Structures are given as structure tokens and as C-alpha cells.
Length: 109
Image (cartoon, rainbow, N blue to C red; front, side, top):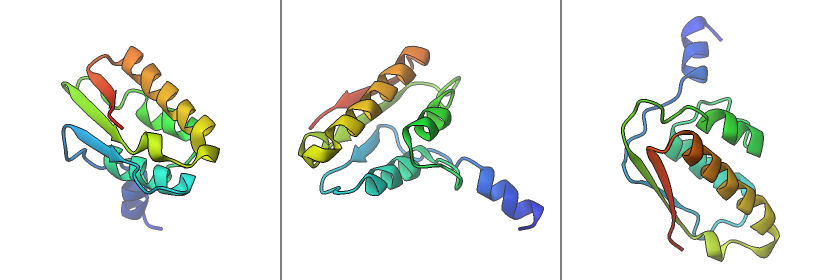
């Protein structure tokens, strides 16, 4: 990996939409949820696909960036065995909002 590849690997991608739509409809595995989070929030390639990594990447992401709305769909249709984990994701979203009130998370369905 040369220095340009390493920079690309570590770089956050631009967030391309506002509102940001997180649609978890049809997700059956945590990896699918993390793939959506990674894509929609523009996380770098090294994103670890766990709760700690989610917090690390979201912490400060929306500072000084204007107002953002994140709409969450498909949450209530996730498999029961994912409920505890996904509830922790919502807790992280709440913590992010408390730290950066310019981003609002709306649980739609």
C-alpha cells in the first residue's frame, strides 16, 4: 500500500444526502446493518463494524457541518435476535445527538 492508498483507506467519504436515509428493511445480519451505516455516513475503509467503532466514527462527524436529519426505516422489522444490539445503536445515536444537537435521528419504522 503506497501513501495515496493509505490516505484513501483512512479517509471519510462525503455524506451525499440530507436527510440521511438508513433503511434496514430486509436486513437479517449485523454485517448488513454496518454496511449501510458505513455507506450512508461515509465511514473510512477501516471501520470496524462494531458499536465502539460506530461511536468512534460518529463522534464529532457532524461538528460545524450544519443541520442533518437521519431517518431510520425498517428498525421494527429486524429479527428479534438483533433487538438488543440494535437498541444499543439507537443509544449511540442519542449520545451523538446530545454531543452534536445539529444532527437529529428520527425512528420512522
